[in-house]
Structure formats: structure tokens, C-alpha cells
Length: 162
Image (tube, rainbow, N blue to C red):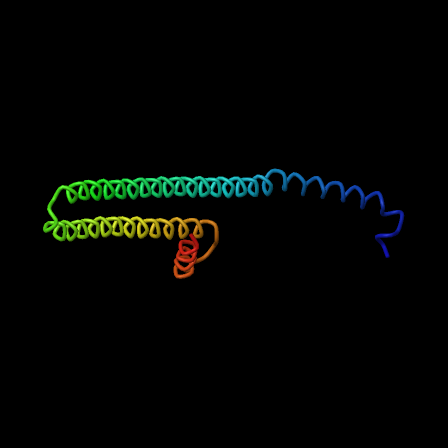
């Protein structure tokens, strides 16, 4: 075998060094900067997606806090209305007691309906925003088309768990 003959070792080592230097320079000047650029772009895109997800999470948390404050305010108002009505009832005659009770029941039902309407509106907005954020995040993080039915099912499951 000619490659194991000692008379050719010097020329083989010489050409090995030349080829190694040429490939090293090609890799250093062309391939490695391209790969580094792709990795840097990918890291920047992932970081942007993470920041957007955090921003959306903060917005959702602010919405939830506002919803809870509105709910507490509505309950406090309902309690205040109920207390005022009870004070009026104590001063009225026995014949007017039935009429006032009916009026309070209607007011309480309206307050509960308002609370239920606000709650359902907030939850539907929350669900829509959660589906939008999950769709945006998964489309940026995972290649290819994202199954919106799976995302909606996951969001519904997460909302039911809470």
C-alpha cells in the first residue's frame, strides 16, 4: 500500500497541512459566521417571543385583577343596596313588607345578572386572548401549521382547572 510507505510520508504530511489550513480558513471565514448569524437571529426571535408572552401574561393578570376589583365593587354595591333596603323595610308598615321584599329580590337578581354578565364577558375575553397568545407563541416556536382545535382545547382545559 503506497500510503504506508515511508518515502511518501513527508509529501503526505505536507499536503495534509495545506488542505487542513485551506479548509480551516474556509470554515472560519464562510461557514462559522453564517451559522453564528443564524443562531443569533434564532436567539433574538426566541427572546422576543418570550418577552411578548410575558407581556401578554402581565396584561392578562391586569385584566384578572381589574375583573376581581369590579366584582368586589359590584358585591359591595349590592350589599350596600341590600342594607339600605332593609333599613327602609324596618320603618315601613307590615302591609308594605311584601312589596319591599319583592323589590329587593328583583334588585339582587339584576345585580347577580350584571355580575354574571361581567364575569362571562371577562372570561370570554380572557379565553380569546389566551388562545391568541398560545397560537402566536406556538406558531413562532414550532415549525409548520398549528392545530387551533388543540390549542383551544388546551386553553379550555387550563381554564376549567382554575
